[in-house]
Length: 268
Image (cartoon, rainbow, N blue to C red):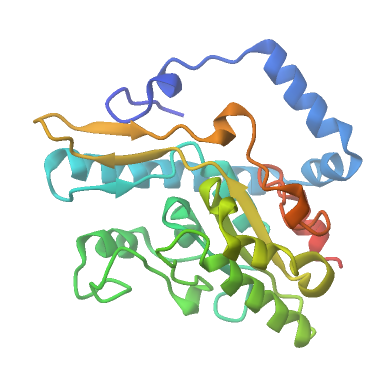
């Protein structure tokens, strides 16, 4: 993929593969036969679609950065570095619209919107707060039930109980529909998230949460230049797990990069 020094973080621009890291990554994939079998079944068309979705998400971020730089908008929340954790799980879902699976993306998982069928143009209209945007110009948080996208809740972690409730509803209806959301490292320290996690494995079963580490936001600084502000999280220091005492079962947190957890969940 083309990298742009003006828009991408320095570590992206200067990145080159580390043979040892690549070897460990390959060993991780092949070490779990369920993960390995799932990946081996991916067709060339699916792989291209996954890649296209991640490129689409990156171009969405680049466009927003350009707007910040030009003064069109004052700030943008980016998903740079989270393309796989957003696009991968969504592609494992039934994306047939209002009657399909449901996602509740946080603003850094905006790529879920266009991968569920919402137009990128509508997503940009949300940032511009125009009357023809999905939220009629109210705020940045956009969604659309016709796409299976639940509008994000501004408070971190508050969407997790909503998704858990949808999963419970699907279970009571004996439906195979799934509900999926993402929470950041900070949100795992809130009570709402663990209220949502606790019932997931034994009682709900149709809802999934991806714990991620949000990294970038973009806003003009106090001087004339603009900056990308990096937020260092505990996850980047190797710990993104919530307290073990508040989790019940192993289904609360899924591996988003390979998506096999979602496909396995559909068979239960």
